[in-house]
Amino acid sequence: MEPININALVQTFAGRNAELIIQDEQGSDQAPSVQKFIKRIQLCPDGTHVRFYFDDFYFLAVPLAAEAILSEKEWTASDRESGLIYKIAI
Image (cartoon, rainbow, N blue to C red; front, side, top):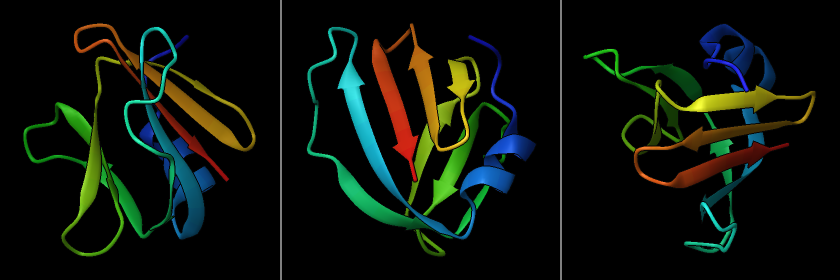
């Protein structure tokens, strides 16, 4: 796993439809997966999270401290502090 690379995320996911999944460390779904259009991706104002915006108001925030893996069509970030795993796939 590696630190979050926001530029790679923008190139891969911004302006695209994606499936979002949030799981706990055991891999069980915390919530159902959802299909969302990712309008833009940027850092939050205090620089602690990366935000995946679905429109001009709603977003998913993932801690920058999370360890991430980016492939051609999927991004997975593991946040050890919260015990959550975030997955975004196109």
